[in-house]
Amino acid sequence: MAHGHKSDEKIVYVGDSRIRKRTNKNSVPPDYTAFPGKSEVFIPNFLLKEWLVGCVVLVGFLVLTIAEAPPLGYPADPTNTAFIPMPDWYFLFLYQYLKYPYASGDYVVLGAVLVPGIAFGALLLAPFLDTGKERRFYRRPVASALMILSLFSLVYLTKVSWDHYQHELEITGTVPEHIEREEKAREAAEKGESYSAVKKEETVALVDADDPAMEIAKANCIACHAADLNGNSKMKVPSLHGIGDVLSKEELVNTVTNGNGNMPSFKDKLTAEEIDQITSWLAKQKKAQ
Image 1 (cartoon, rainbow, N blue to C red):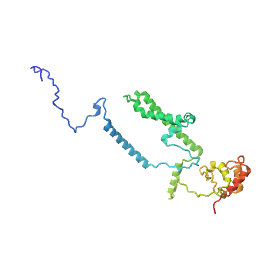
Image 2: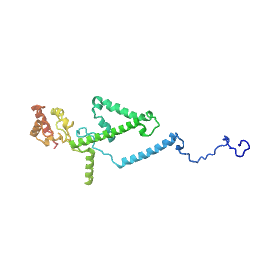
Image 3: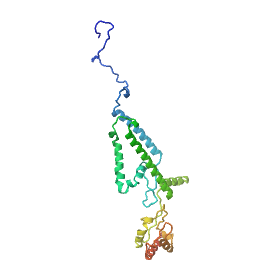
Image 4: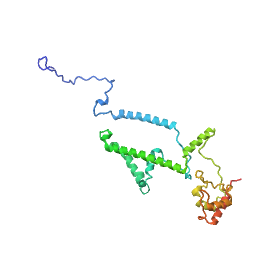
């Protein structure tokens, strides 16, 4: 309304609550950047986006697992002393960390439970501990420094662990089981043959297994020849099953007394009577005719 009767007087309109603004339900809502300090609602808008991204990542991960076969070794063999155990790559940093003296031995609880528990616990509680609104990393020196230090530690420990593993393979001349198995499977495929990782070997029964010499063998031979006396092919330790077909009584006496190659000498550990007893028993270990 106009105040007075002057034509050049400024007219001020007052909002009338009786007039409602018309809204179109099909109109696109304004972008959230139009509201300073505000953001989209967590449920369902933000959460739906997170679910969609998670589904895409999961599908990509499943495609990779299907396309690339896992590197499998041979079936577990507790008598294989040449096997070098290694965890999966994402635990190499922790595997290397537990090798250090301040994280093992008397401090194994500190290294295996306390320190990893604090690290992973801090990661879970980070959103609740760091509630600042600043998102530029150079404006958050403490959080940024901890993140960079953690990433550097993970990369460094992983590399050191892997390099040490490769060094052990070189000095022992060991070929990793999954590589050896893959090579043998490829060679068998080239020849048109089938390949099985389960080694089927002819089992030769022990002759006179209740002989007292068996106790001497258990006390002195199982460390190398395994508890079942079948030996260890990877360490080039022969089986004692059927050893009588390979060595004569005189050769067995000489081997046990003086040693041979990987075979240690037992002349200082066993008496002459015990050597004669066990070699006589070993000479009887022959395949059934």
